[in-house]
Amino acid sequence: MSARDQVSLYTPVSQAKPDCSSCRGTGWATVAGTRQVRPCECRKANQQEQLLTKAQIPPRYKNCTLTNYYPQGKPNTNEFISQARAQQDCNHFVKEYPMIDYGLLFLGPCGIGKTHLAAAVINKLITWKNVPCLFYDFRDLLKEIQESYNPNTQTSELKVLAPVYEAEVLVLDELGANKPTAWVQETMTQIINTRYNEKKTTIFTSNYLDTPVKGGYDETLTERVGIRLRSRLYEMCRTVIIQGEDYRQKALSPKTQPALIR
Image (cartoon, rainbow, N blue to C red; front, top):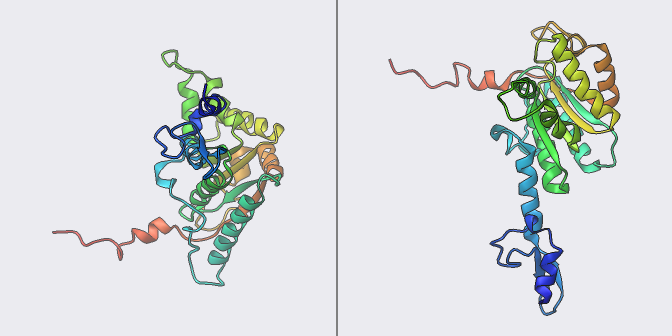
């Protein structure tokens, strides 16, 4: 058996690209001018591709980064300052991870980039530090759990929830968006308590604030998730409050829309 064949036995081939010209799928490349080998760069690239696929970041947010998030509004306004500070908090979080013992809770109205920032954080964690992450819109997660109760489906509640419990870093987008029925409350409690007890890092976004503001939602986050879970979130996460106007509404205002053909 050749040295190359021996190396391939101990190589995680799934992390190597089979068509790589440097390692020819073994995961190991020869050091120029020697008989030594080193881990091939394709292993790192392929591992990141696999992690990004497993993260299930929605297509709309796959290209979100911390550098293409642009704070809106005029400098020195509350809107601009809060968004710039949120971006700064995200950069600090990524830089310090995993030597950090909290997640992030983005609170603010619709259309100010909360989901962009959450997706950007896990994109950066994957591509910079190879951290396994998972993205879920909380409404979609609840729907998948409900569908698992259907006897005709080939899945179970545990199968749906296992990746959510086990993800090293989890994004739960739109926390509190669902009507807080007894079942929704119980499911939220089960998920958040499990990650709390296991000291898992979780990033949340929500349109519900702790204090209602003019033009926003009438209910508070506590009213949507309950006193106990809001208490858990205080301990699990750094609260990042973002102010501003809905950029989608600005982009689609009558002034920016093309004229209709009559």
